[in-house]
Length: 269
Image (cartoon, rainbow, N blue to C red; front, side, top):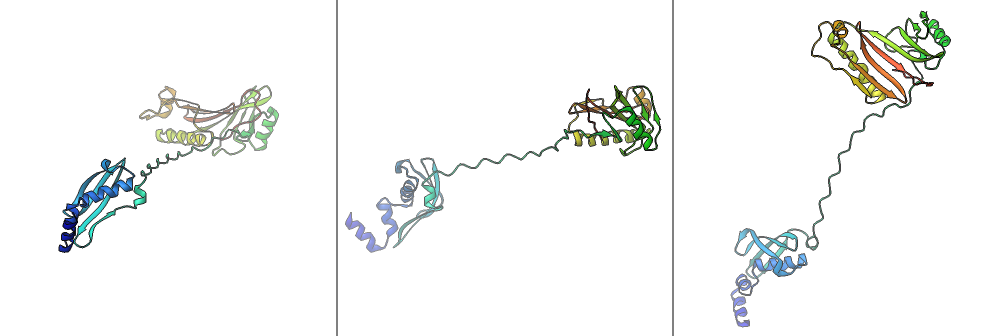
């Protein structure tokens, strides 16, 4: 064997020497990969990806690892094998891909769970005399009617002027209803209802109950409401208090605040 080797070296055919001695590119890649993978050589499989003969790119697989190597054999230089990635990274399994972060849920606006003290300038638990004084003090007319008195207008603005119907529980206000008169126009009525519903939903959260659907069309809204073809009612419950909006005859939009029994606070739009 020494005589053959000396003869090859003298002739300058180093590439042929590697082939004769079992050190061709594929064999060298297998040895290099076995070392990099910390894997027995016989468990490493090598495949030529590109190139031919004494130069090419090889894929090595073994012990659950895969890597690419460039190998070249030439005269006077022997065979060179170079890993396409850092050899230190090849000696351990590749890290598992990180799990994608869950999409952040957009938080809904927090509902108001603390009812304000009143509506339209009236306060729950105020006495009938105090309610009358608030009404007449604002230049409005007070109409006493047992436990259902009425003020001719709002004492504090709710965005429109309206008679205010009150309900007395004993001698204290426990219910406040304001009522806006609407044009007899289908789009205007439905649009106003949705606007107030959205305002109350933004303040108190999702409705606790809803009844009715918007029909495809009503040429005469007042008649549709009267005949029951257009009926909308939505409720919110906040700390025992109830807020309700409802389409009434006219057409009108009723905004109804009701306190629980014994409640001392109220709701406002």
